[in-house]
Image (cartoon, rainbow, N blue to C red; front, side):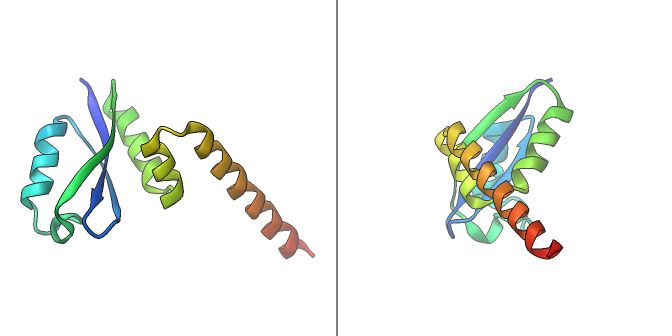
Length: 106
């Protein structure tokens, strides 16, 4: 059964990442504020800015978990479809981590 991973841009400029079997229905629930305890409730209106369909829940869950851990810049590169940009951000992140390791090992 297909699942969708999606990113919403909230009214406050933040991003929300989720997964669902019914993308249109889930986005509608976010817009309506169907769940007062949800992240998006006080940040409406929301706008669907990216989505991808996967073949399995496991794949969707992995994508969602990975994207939730990404920086804002990396999420925005994904939204733009800028795969090269994502790679450049990853290279920069690795370089910064290596520099920090070198500094701590001195």
